[in-house]
Length: 418
Image (tube, rainbow, N blue to C red):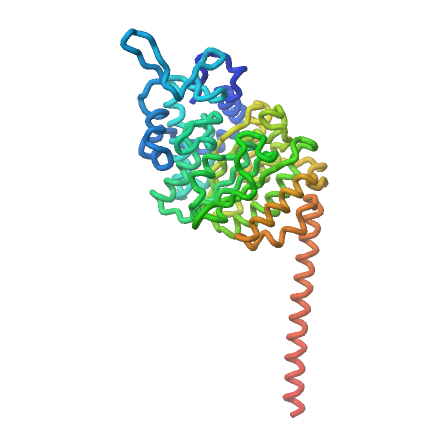
């Protein structure tokens, strides 16, 4: 997976480069976190596995031995139409998605194979949970189309194979990469067995890839099983911990609990973290926040959670977030979210998005109706409100018990009188 890089040799002009994996791995070794984990042997996905969600033409083009360049009879070299020469001198599927004739197919198949292998071991309860540190990423890859640094949809293939090979009934995919997973949504849009929940920067379709409106809820028997939290309002102010924690509290966790998944796969992109340019991200979610989101998901599906790396291009925040999430999976002490984030209410743009999302999704999920009054609270306020409600319920319960006891005493007295 490290060999997948542009033939121009200049990583600075390509955000999705081998240094992403090298940096994460170096961090995990330096901190000793990797020694706390079992390592799952990596493997290449078979073409049959990739064909579970991709067309045959797409699978063979990016995973087979088909070469990009062909020689004409006169000896000149031509390039297949789906590939183009890039300004840097390399070759690509588009301006962002580079292609290396020698190494990209193997890397893409290895990324799929790692996610599939890890997911199936977690589903079989051979290991508790896990994180697949892979590239190239996958959630933009559609059935017939490579785009957005992605060739094969790693998480979608793993989810489909859980259904086909392991008879897993309900799979939840949570996608917190800042870009909408258009490919994953497309592949499960009419499937009631795979619930897809995405939190992404949308800005009314102006942010890449432009898909993922709140109104896109699924189709046919799969209607209601596609949930888009489509952040809007640009970067004024930027989104951060308060907004993501509010989204989990009011939408993600209530719907996930109601769905009752057997396993959870996370398209775990870290490009919503601080340090990314407005073009690649622009948000300010902290590494501790990602750890807490991971921890919340571990309360579901008997803790069977698999994180698969998607985006994340600022190396310092990428390493911080990856380490924090892995520590969460290990049930290590969670890093503390900054106090100002816990005390800050979600910004007005986020509140409006969450209100709209709940209005749409409440047609399919009754659990979100109870969240509508708590969206605008900070984490501290929400926790206080939950405590007060619990105390009220407890008081009412004890009061009703007292009424029952009093009625029993009255019955006994009436019997004695008679």
